[in-house]
Amino acid sequence: MPKVLIIDDSKMTRSYHASILKSAGYEIYEAEDGAKALDILYREDKIDIILTDLNMPNLDGFSLIKKIRDDEFYKNVPIIIVTTLDKSTDKMKGFEVGANFYIVKPSDPESLIESVKLALGDE
Image (cartoon, rainbow, N blue to C red):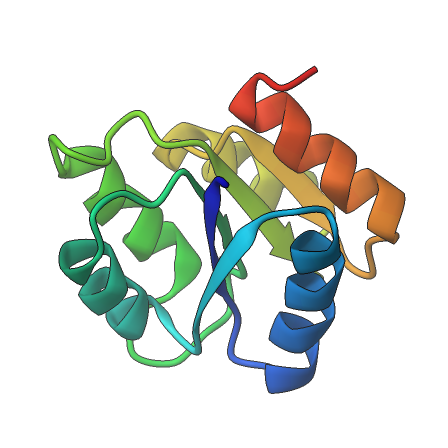
């Protein structure tokens, strides 16, 4: 069962994404910001995919992705940005720092599952 780390400062959003992915057969870990996400990444055996928001306290999504890409253990883990930021400059910056996919909220369940499967190479 692939492990998914969902990072968003909104508990409601985390719970929504978690319920969708849990019902699709994924093991879920949640963090409310990038700093907590790093704690989970360093504590767990291996997270298979990361979904992150961009606007968060303590450590934003862009900075978090940079740190993950600099880590030898996680540098190749798929990262999906799930955010309300829909400007092309935000998308470009997201891909520049190392994201694999960029989804603008609100995301429908089918698109979210499809993106996770594609990022993991399951389809």
